Amino acid sequence: MEAAQPALFPVDQLVGPRGPEEVSRVRELAKACSSCRLHETRTHVVFGTGNTLRPRVAFVGEGPGANEDAEGEPFVGRSGQLLDKMIAAMGLKRKDVYICNVVCCRPPDNRRPQPDEVFACRGYLFAQLRAVQPEVIVALGMTATEVLLNKAKKAKSVREKWHNWEGIPLRATFHPAYLLREPTQKKAAWDDLKAVMLKLKIED
Ligand code: URA
Image (tube, rainbow, N blue to C red):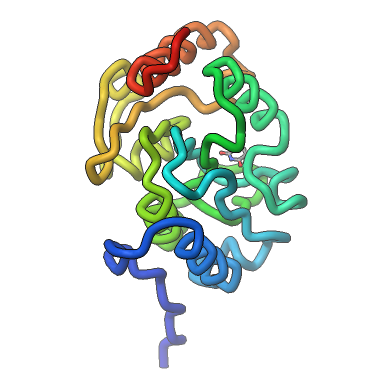
């Protein structure tokens, strides 16, 4: 007999409840999640943090690294330090924004999350975004962009234009880890963030 599959968090369940209480409810469900293999090797479930009540921006990364897994917070390592600088350069503070990832558990050896892991976790991501209702979503890197736009696209063709996710304006930019490897792309990333600032009516 086949082993029973763990239940996935239902992607379509959420249309109504919004705000901090809903985020807490989903966080508790995520903390107990064993829907994919990543739960076997995680130290912490790394759930989203920040402003849960209509933040100016929700930044969506790929998945926790070693530091995030150890601390249970998204973007606390080197990529996080760069993301902090990006947020500050936009004239915002961490408390103004929401920060989360496509997958809540660390993929071993910092590999990209596999399609079934993304599929298992995307309900938590969607539920967080629906609950916090950011003014703008910024997808950091291709994993977040592909999941939120529901298609595989070339980095070149997704940047420099507005998309939308469930009616929320979405901009794609480079992942901070990529920018650490390719600092020459920082100028292009800054152009992406300036487009977000313009949308949010933040003075440059
Ligand atoms: N990279 C990510 O995509 N997310 C984190 O939380 C840290 C590094």
